[in-house]
Every structure is written in C-alpha cells, then in structure tokens.
Image 1 (tube, rainbow, N blue to C red):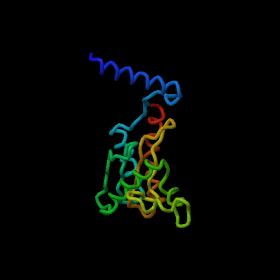
Image 2: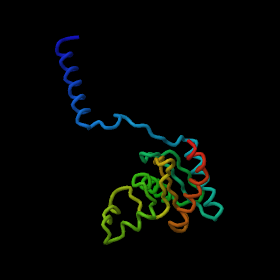
Image 3: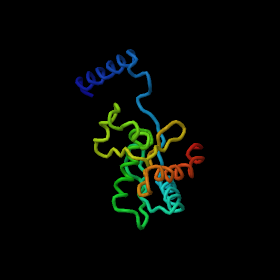
Image 4: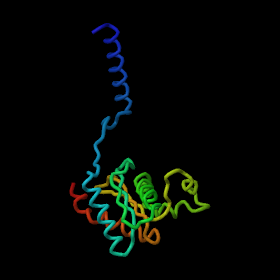
Length: 171
C-alpha cells in the first residue's frame, strides 16, 4: 500500500470518527425493510379484480412496490383502455404519499394548501388507490380503475389488501 493510499484511508477513518462523534450517525448506516414478493402482489391484485367482478365492474388493477415500481397489472377483458394508466397512477400515488387517493383528493381540492399536487405528473387525486402497509411499514400500493366512481374502486382495492392482511402482518 502506498503512502497516499494509507493517508487516504487514515483521512476517511478520521472523517468517520468525527461524524460518529458528532452524532450524525446516531443510527446504523443501513436499514432493512420488507417488500412484497411478486406472488403476494399477484394475489392482492386478483382478489381486488374478483371483488370488482362480483359487483359487476370491469376494471384494471395495479400493484406497485414501495418505490412505486409496477409489480402486477391485471385488466379485465372489457375494462376501458384508460383504466390501465389510471390504475397504475393510483397505485403509485398511494405508495408515494402513503395515503388513500380518495383522502388525497379531498386534501388537494382547489383552495387547499396542497391543491398544487394535482398538477404534478402521475398524481392521481381520485379514489381507488390505497397504500399497502403492514407492521408499520409501507410495502407498496394498489390502484383500481374502471368501477363507477372512486369509492367503488377503493372498495375493490381494500378487498385485495384484506385478502392478504393476516399473511402480511405475520411476516
């Protein structure tokens, strides 16, 4: 090892010691988190789709991971073509904001402090998207589109999550 390499290592060690002493690294430098496996995301989506079918609705259902990346997309045979993009955006919005898109719709009405969010790309401030959470951690989001109204979409999304609730909580 050369003198410059030794000096560099010593400098990094001193920097880390200073950071640790200052309390900047009060927590571990890494963290662990849970994430939905594709099979669980698929089961949640299937149950949401089935709930909509039982009510006579043709919908699209999207499930995203905690980062908002699409894991599963199901589109019933007669669901409108627009429902695909909308369901994905609802799932992304629910995971991104960690709230139901129906609640976000209320919070972003004209005149509200957060009304500007409605103008941001991918934000779907309409009912039908829910965060998927268990054990205090965000696991992902689900979005349903195509039922007659956001409340009906959200009912289907909730049915999908609840179908796996016990398994999600036990992990």
